[in-house]
Image 1 (cartoon, rainbow, N blue to C red):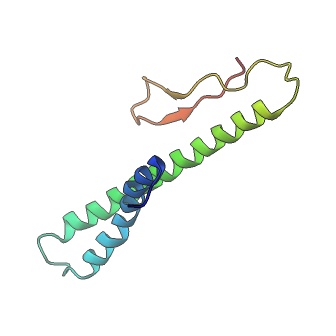
Image 2 (tube, helix red, strand yellow; image 1 turned 90 degrees about the vertical axis):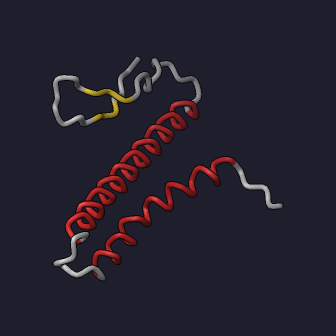
Image 3 (cartoon, rainbow, N blue to C red; image 1 turned 90 degrees about the horizontal axis):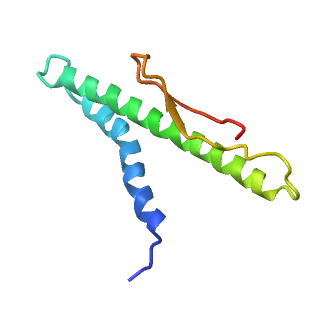
Length: 106
């Protein structure tokens, strides 16, 4: 049996999710516009595209934080306080539920 690291198992579901918009789009293209499922398929395609964009954005943010942490730890004789001190920040007054990464000097 092949030894697969944990992150290999975690990556697989994300890769599958990222293929769903393409598969749903193909299904939509083969569904007649007058078919009862056509409108729901279009909604599913749009929703899955939003999910994939969300995943891509989170991955990009995570990679940025990792890079900043690596740079911060790689500088010899670092005399300044830590650069990374906070994570996800959301505004409760905002109705759009938009979350932002918060980077502060600690």
